[in-house]
Length: 485
Image (cartoon, rainbow, N blue to C red):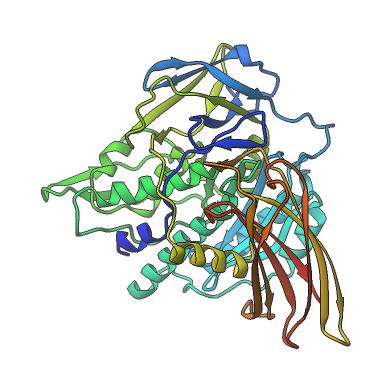
């Protein structure tokens, strides 16, 4: 897989921000961290205070701007509550591993509650992301959908995949992670992705530049981090010896990385200097950079899944304004410490201090809108809800959709003119008809709740309506869906 294809899929970099007002301007530099604290046994620690935390950027202490502890178990679920996606990978796993993984996920859903954490169930196949069930607090609904999922026979039992398929499956996997990140950019919640996968076969390769592999991995990790995504991977293959990884450096020398447990920090930097990654190394580095973990050498998926889901739910949201105001694009390391003995704070390893980006081109805006309209995911940078009605006899659909302020909007200036798009989709997800217009609010949607109306006759093949609202930059998109039948 060429790195250029991966880079084309990534969004221009910008730094998320948080403030007490609905609108956070792009010239206000705030770094938002999602931090999970565990004790010596790996159990989440929820009762810490702001004074218990110290944040270091490139080794220098930073002043905390805001602090939000984990939600208590008896509190109401808010739009800012952490969310979880359980992603069952049919592309990069054998049928036997998939069957075992499904059984273990069902055990988890039967024995564990979702702890006030809205959880979605998705699968990854040749078409990309398959939405089995959107965010819900009902574990029984997830069990029902997973029980009736027909598992794909995409890979032979011995795990050997044709070389042409390796690159296709790897690219689809990366594209799917990018799609999830784009849908979450600017949302008011952090997201934990539990990717049940045997790992992408083969590796990322780049023959065009010596640092291409590192650059591509860093760009992907940066996109996930900006979307407030913590990535976990669980290998359903169970206990098996890890292969020795041989990494070729640009000079042609060979460096051997010993077998090791994923999650260990040793030899990661060594691997980053090579031009190819073993699948295990890729997942280990990617999950670590986002503050997550890669689970290998164990076949108790149910336990690993519980650690990932419940650990991600015990999330502290902490922000700070960097003392270093020179945003020159360089990577900055982050370390979070606690004053409580025996605890460890887990968060992303760092971020790229990127200057303000130029406005995207019209072509890029159109591509973003179209991708959001056909995606099975809900884009959450803008909080959009829709109340719709459909008359099957006349084919007429009417709707009133609402846009609410969200705390993580980034804009250079408040805007009154917004873009409204509506698409009618067939059962296969193809667009059967679409409409778009601009609307001038009396006041910008970043300051108050606003509404718009829709009244159209739909083509007969239409099965679903998707509503989209976007600001002029197109990087902040909100969508909602309405099933016609």
